[in-house]
Image 1 (tube, rainbow, N blue to C red):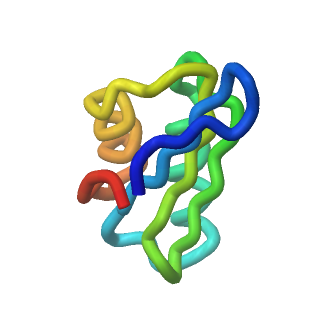
Image 2: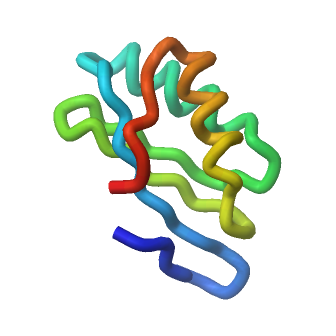
Amino acid sequence: MTAQTDTPGSVTAVYKVTGMSCGHCEGSVSGEISEIPGVTSVRAVASTGEVTVVSEAPLDEAAVRAAVDEAGFELAGKA
């Protein structure tokens, strides 16, 4: 899925993260990504490995990868 504009000034991107298996994992990933400047919403789903991120502008994938790494998981790329 490519980034899409939801509302004026917001961009939604869906990333694939490997290794999440529970709610605690979802919280760890969401917490780290939410600290990236410009992020307004994060929703991680362990069962699918998908993380939906809404931000004010497109995010640098390296920043998302670093946040996911900090949480102890691996960013596989955009879903």
